[in-house]
Image (tube, rainbow, N blue to C red; front, side, top):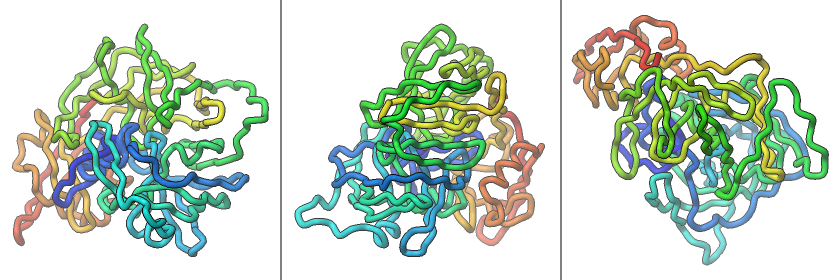
Amino acid sequence: MSLRHLLCRQHPRPLAAHRLRFSAPLCFLFPVVCLLLSAGCATALRRPPGRTVAKIGSTVLPARIVSNFFVVESRSDDDRTYRFIIDTGSTISYASPELAKRLGLKRKKGAPARIPVRSAHGGVIELEPVTLRRVSLGNLPLERVSAVVFDLGDLSNHLGLHIDGIIGFPVFRDMLLTMDYPGERLIVAPSPLFQSPPKPALRTSTIAFNSEQKTPLIPVQMGGESFFVLIDTGSDGSLSLNPAGLHPRFATGPRAGTLISSLQGDRRQLTGRLSQNLLVGTHVVERPIVDLSDQLSSLGGEFLRNFSITFDQRRNQVTFVRTADGVVTMEPRRSTGLAFSRSPVYWRVLTVIPDTPASQLAVQAGDLCVRINGELVEHWTFDRYAALLKSAAKVTYTFITGTKETDIEVPVFELVP
């Protein structure tokens, strides 16, 4: 999914989604966070007060790629360690209520108590603006960071990792931002405005991007057709494709996947593998997996994790670097056909994907899973569960009804070969 379905409606005790639209590959669903991370998509209808100030300097921070999201952590002035998702698909930043309370500046007299934020689907929600006095990324302090307050608890549960905030693309407008997925590190350096651009190297492609909407849009090619996509690190998917005006051809599918929740209601995701290649600059992506969308097409973390990506907002250029030769290939998506929302105590079934082995079993939305292969769900981190789906032939889920526990064995299959 992604932090891209930015303003998903709230569900009782579920997960979230922005384009926090979380991916079908692992069959998790983020109904709540739909509000945050949606493909491009969080837009403040009134600009939050202030402008982020970054002192000149450079920093290199370790990163974790969790569910294809780019997560960094850093110790702040209050001697606490905070975790942030870097989301190039969002025009605004988000702070948890706890982070806003600890680092937020006192609101000026007469400042609005709430500002409207519009989702990718056109819906609007009012959120509290906050100015964070200082957010530290390694040894680089970001001062007066404008954000809105949003409860990130469901997102944290989904990832099995406490998340304090989401940093939007405009925060790095005066800096050179490198998100090195293979090296799992974030590099921030002064803008090279007055430097000569580096000479292109092998396995490197530099592309001009359009940033009129304060997020990076680049041209790509599919077959003989060209179209624009958003570079959306707030999505865990591969290529989210709006087929309007295009003629995609499929090697597999499209078929029904998990549910996507939005202000307009729930809809079934359609996913498949193209028979056409995707050309991103000089990089060839062989028959990518796509999720069909009626919103802006975008490239998410499942695709981006093949690259080290550098954004230069002063020149409106993005550079994709690979350490490997040849075309980019995408692994099949494996699934048990069950989509869950996660909590520390249980995982709730949000949907059963139709026409899968799981749809023939005695499992339905709302069922509570307390064990996986005999171990309590609290021991199953996102990464561990993802590794299980990649290698296992079957998974045994233990569901609880009242005080009764029932084991159900579910085959693992290729949702998209």
